[in-house]
Length: 443
Image (cartoon, rainbow, N blue to C red):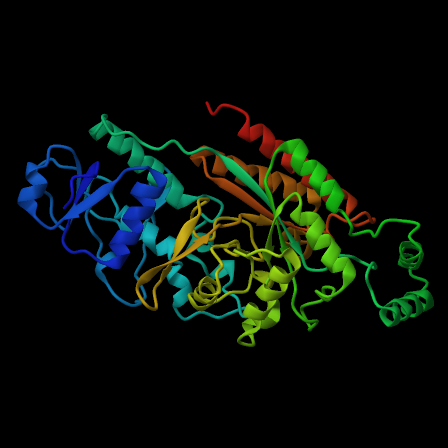
């Protein structure tokens, strides 16, 4: 042991899982430097703040009984029985001061342990929200890990009033997936003529839009970038734009990265926002494509690309993340469900990947998102106003724990056409709500 710590924890054994979860809870969330000991004598003699994290109680010292998950290796189907403690869902219950093993339970959710277990993937090869423990037990809309940590902080304050904790502040990040940069602008002559012929024969109302856009008599309906810049500055909310740079395929339809309009919009956005890669759907099917697409975006931005979010939120654990990390990605924003809002990993705070396949921490930071507008628009066919109310409720939950609220939007949803108007209004109303939350003292 070294002397530079504020909290001593007695453990029955050390493991990479123990180190990972202690770092997340104590160092990252609470700002408390920690140290472990295997010596009961050293633990008893220590006069500062301390926790007994073993299988047996020692006097009246703060006792959190270990469930055993953190000393296991590999992935084993866990028998989980949820109960409530003061209205709060808990599992891995034990006879101890917290009534459950908060460390094992938090690790289970953060590591996405259940996603390593056998499950039926959806049509796109993704783990569905409906298969998750959180969905089945009605706590997906709560940042449960964050709430548990707040409860632990309260307990530590009572036991050790001399401890100094880090005070987190509520934050919000607006993120945008640019799957298709423009509705008409930048299309080649053959695609343009084909579109005119197709929609002209159908007497589609968008034909006038298309022709007017081509003749530069009106702005492209999906060119909302200047307005988004104005809103970001008005409400003082940071933003990140994720660009799809892959070749055209069944699920990838953006302009070519060599297209002059694509080059122009990337450089334009780079002047007022951070940008990241939006690896194409095809990257999940063909090796080597992610590296190629990252290089394309680096060519357009003339800078290192360090942020990413998967197209269709399609990823596999741990392989997608370890590949991204090896390619220089430091932060990923894919941790969300496509078909549901809520807290996929039980937290609103960024956290590092724990690779259960290789039992190690991977230093790619995961920023979980809690809502995506196409979830309501496409999956539920529910109005923009209802989505706004859902986002406000989720933002309130994040505000209670002083976490980071991340939402996902698409430029075409916010476009200046008949379908986009209500979503654009909801988008700005949410930004104002988040601004007010950030600038209002918490009671």
